[in-house]
Image (cartoon, rainbow, N blue to C red; front, side, top):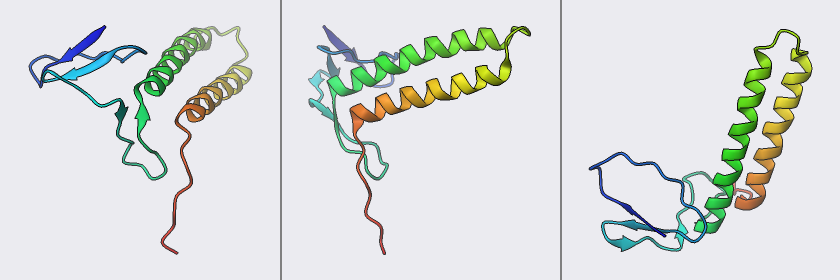
Length: 108
């Protein structure tokens, strides 16, 4: 499957999935996306990005269920908050396991 992106003509958001090619202005984008402008992060493969996006989508589904529980006065909000924090931490760790950010050099 190929995804075409046209520069600024339409607003289209699509998370690239494994096996998809990103095409900008008729050219296939490189196999790796450049790293974030954050120290310690390096270029990532399209597969790694797709896996991280899949985790983020699953995390959002779980968080929406927790949002529903938060509206229920019968739910112990303290335990719910603790569970939410642990779930967010778990997903963050899983994404970090994919991107494997490194340590940074300090000017000292």
